[in-house]
Image (cartoon, rainbow over all chains, first blue to last red; front, side):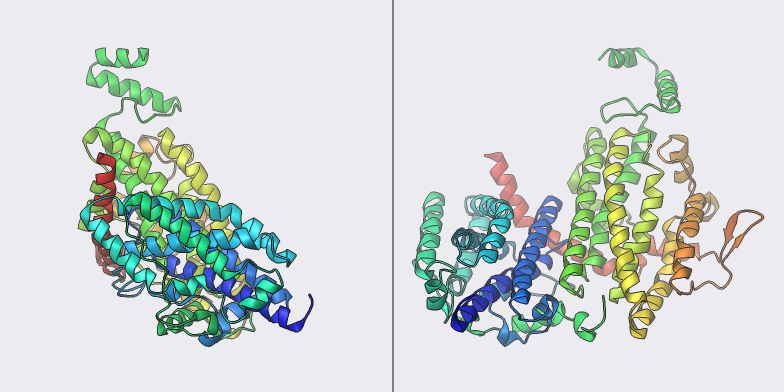
Length: 264
Length: 321
């Protein structure tokens, strides 16, 4: 570890990586028992479990960097301290995971697929990171991520090329995800420092790789490609979030927060 | 192939006699073997009920997946519930093979669940209002399931016996995960211990009910007896319940917890546990869909089934191409 500002940038990056996986794994776990068929329930819950494991790896790195206990970091930070992209905290649809969940499978597929493509590209860059523990974590995570991407790509391609209803639902979901996916693609205010220290590649390079990959899939499946995704509801990398995150964190920490000192 | 040709020349009575001889010799019956309708129907009833119980059983635990009180517990409960879904899927595949000659499939299983014709285990109709319940379900409900499933590991129906082998191996990990939650709370604060005792009070009756009534007298049917005759299962409900008591009551006591039955004791003379019997009419009410959470949990399943109809249509259209 070199300068304090480099360390600060590294910590920012790790929070982004951890919180992205943590929150999206949580949203995925809300789907449990509600997926389109039982085989998908098995596969999706396996993916969410993997992603929660990835978040755990990053939180452990933060613990080693002196940010506090991993469980405290995950469960007790205020929403404004979270660095996940706003899109990933968004609810799955009307209702809650316990009552009247009218969840939208098209949104689940598009959000997870686009995120998975980005995650793959991000890991590809991180495995050459100058922060060796991060590079090592990335290499480990990639072995699982490979299957996640394959899973979501299959769903995406199948649904966008099927019935008219499926196409129209998928198009609506793509439009919705596009409005905020820019928030996933950014590395936030400390990005120049992250890149200078060789923790990760330039965010513009990563973004171009993502757009190229998605554009190719759009062309292949006959979808119109509408340029760069936007970031309409705020930059989660700066701690800007929606009430959906506040609700998610209240659920995630409900039991732990009753007594963080005791063993559970 | 030779065996099949032989079967074609036999009368129904001779086929049945030959089938029972195979079973009594301890041979395994496979999906494509000749079997009496009665045996097939008993298996379908048992295995589809078991499979759908695994799937409905994910719902009470799902309530605690996001709320699990540490990253470690979150990962463990996610793994456990995923296993349960996997068991459900595996068992439904076994049931589907048995149903195929009757022209039925997965859709029929789901519709029977929604209409109440296909029942699921009493325990999954109950509410699980605290984290203590998540521990209690994994420790004692899964512990009870291991006991009742282990006696079918040598089931006369080969595909079911093989599925159970894998399921039981995973259930052992679940019970350990449950025990670890229970131990952490038992060694914790007074509030944690109270939560645990409340949870045990809540689950005790359901655990007694889990194994089913003592005899046909209470339910008016004799599925259990029939399944023993066909060597699908090896023990009676009461034998299993006694095994459960012998294994778990000393452990519950050693944690300093109180069993909510002041009459419970081991009778040295009969070598049996004496306990307060439960109200089997209440059991009947619960498993016929009138338990505290029956409607909500079925509604979750039905709602997701309806919401995702377009997805199934889209996949069917792709298959048709």
